[in-house]
Length: 292
Length: 332
Image 1 (cartoon, each protein chain N blue to C red):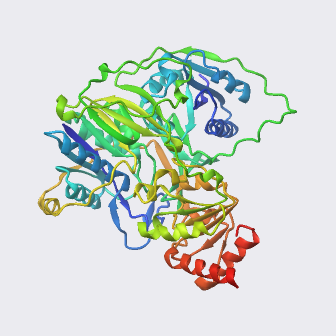
Image 2 (image 1 turned 30 degrees about the vertical axis):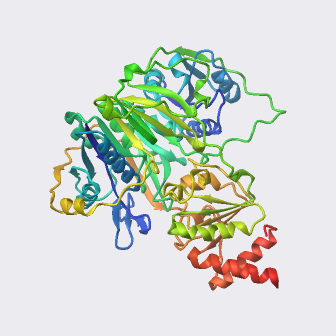
Image 3 (image 1 turned 180 degrees about the vertical axis):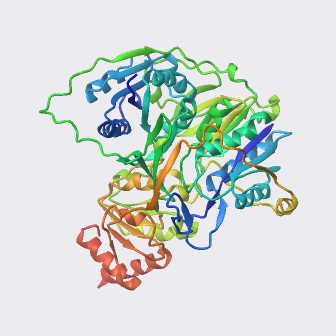
């Protein structure tokens, strides 16, 4: 099967940021540390696990971003992806989720991927939009916040249509997922069983007919570290680069009015002095409040 | 046709959750700024009373979209049910909660309606160029103001960020009931099948009962350092260990310890945040705590914005000092 994994390059969360000169986006204050969006590492890992179980699986990783974003595709190759596709954008600054989805859709549209994986969101902007937008642009069924996925050889039509009942939406009525036969035994995968994470640890189970898009939640697996052989291969393997074409239909529907430091919402007190002074003051405060 | 502000109600087990009240409150704020009328849409199975309840509580016109396939949420049927109704109402602003459900379909709805899409919105205001919506960036360190340049704008509202009106006064008469309009919907999913919900696993951990929660974030650095957090929680009579999502994702603590939008919402007497940066998702789950103390090496961390007391220190050196001093004072 053909899998496309969408990855984004983000600033490491520890890198301090500030509004940029235009006041319309942000920039790193110190020497930036760029890396793969954490959520996307889970998507890459999920693709690799599928390839280990389903014969003849290929994994393409794609990223939309400026020149520097090539590093994140190399990282995907180092983890084990087969090819890296870089849709190069001109400059720094905001790229709307619609514009990103549009550019990935332009690549994916004619290539008939069986499964498209994305992270649930990016760590820096947290829009959580590209996945569902991409699915809508390509006309695919989708699920977000996936905490479990199992491929199945069973076609979507073999599942009964949803049963009607008053407000079944709220019923927490299932304890275990349906037994899914391993795909290797039943030919090519035709559907994917997904458990989505809802609020408070509740999950929602569903089946998507392939081709489909799944946005995976962090924690679905343990992303691997690159193996030496993949690192050596990735060093030599060129990326497929394509300038991101002219802005599409989903571009430019939002205008950034400003980016600024979050004003303090409450005047808290920073405890001052040596670590011992701070510890003493904290203990006094906790005793005053009868917490100790 | 007159443009409208549409709220898509989230209904859970036939009940109206607070996130829906917040979406209505946000729509009322938009109404003040734009003068447009509000309509509430309630996708539901036929015969459900949820739409009627919404109309009675809000005094706003409610349209129930009723179909057998709408008994359980599914992105595909939600879009099929909502798009024609939203178009017929000439929706200018579409407000819905930024929950696991809302975030699942809102971006696709925006694509379908050729609309702007702003997610995890925390507030709005009017300025010279029109309406501006505010959300967080970079784990809450920065704020982003966005305006829509499209004809239609889909907005998902961060749970807990929008203030709702006080609970209705018992002496006050309820708003005049507005009749519910029912639009039948016979759509059925083609590419998806809902299989129901799986309850959260049973757990002995009860964060609700804890008076003090000592919570660990990515800043603990490594799994072994959780020992500092456990020892600190143990000095309180009713202390428990909480965690940020990242700590649970790393497998250092199981998910029942997680505080935040996708975990538990807590309000203990004391919340001691250790090495937690303070994403808006985490803060939403603990901002109701009576006293918040944050320990973090980064003085710019967003957690300090909600903390009553901030301590800029490395928790691996500070907590041992704190525990030693506590022992000394106890025996003094």
